[in-house]
Image (cartoon, rainbow, N blue to C red; front, side):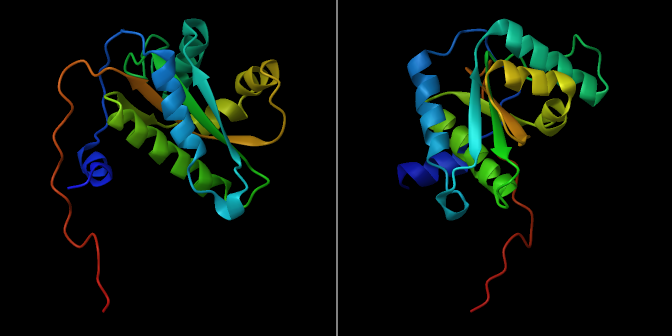
Length: 175
């Protein structure tokens, strides 16, 4: 099996991370892979926030837990030391699809580099809030961006989960 297919078939969502920092060069490689995702008419509507700052990560963690209805001490990022937030320009009609493809590239790239990853939702709600908009403004990011997702990264604490069986009737072949 070729390397690309192997990465696609063996990547799993990791839900427990070591606190070990991820080297900057690996983060940059993962982010670069995200920037090469297919986008409608090559508009490249998404942007990626690569967050390793503990204070900012914890603020997003707190916001995300609150949206979930969980105690503010709950960590929906599973202890991952890196959070890559994908946002996309809502003025582009394919923004949701484009951002989703970025998320897929990020997770596959992370796996190919020996990192665990997981797509964490609620970025939409975070960045619709006053706090989320203020964070973007503080970074000089202007425009109408929607949070597509968080790709948390880090080294898995333990073995990655095994693949679950694929459902029946997933694909239909019309010949």
